[in-house]
Image (cartoon, rainbow, N blue to C red; front, side, top):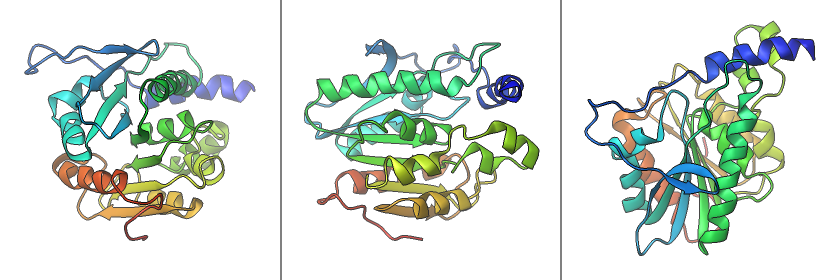
Amino acid sequence: MACSCVVDPAVDYYLYPRVQEPGPHCPAKYPTYNVGGVQCVVVTRADAERTILYCHGNAVVVQDLLISGVASDFVERCKCNFVAPTYPERRATGRCHDKEIIDNVRKVYDTVKQDYCHDIYMVGRSLGAAIAAYACVKHPPEGLVLLSGFSSLRAMTRWSALGYLIGNRLDTEEVIGSCLKGTPKCIIHGSCDDLVSPCNALRLGNASENAAVHIIEGMSHSPDCHWTTVVGLVASFVQRPTAKATGPRV
């Protein structure tokens, strides 16, 4: 227990860096909306056939999803409503900030399930992939998309001693292999991801049933110029005619 008291704040410090909201240099500042007590970016369309709940990575704010056009691209190509929760600010002396974020996302997820009668898909990128998986363990969604996600924090740690102290924080591989084993999954990763090795995608795919793994050649940890390909894969996944994951396994 003493080790956790020392290690957890240190992990929080590096895992959840403080980020700045978009400043005056940005072309637009968009409003957020209260969903289940959590401020979210919300983009809707009248003929939406599903809802995507998107969990972003660290060092990102939800405004980035609108400014970059990523949110509108999801809405247009996936024929969906798009909801992206904000994350609570990291406390200076907090422990395991993961739980605070997961609780926030779960509140949004539960509210969206009540407010919309159609299917809900969870999409998470990087850190958000783990957040998305943990947030829906009690009520699995119609499908789960993990983009540039890690299998666990421990697996990413280069020093074995530190990995031992971190414990099972954000063990995505364990969660999707047990609680979400039968949930259809689309796992997307870049072949040139130097931050989270593509091996993580393969481990996630092997840990679960009904999972399609897509390795995008030349993509790094952030999709950047590959967003069109990423959203295309997600669109194919959410619009599939059956409950089975589609696409080649790797």
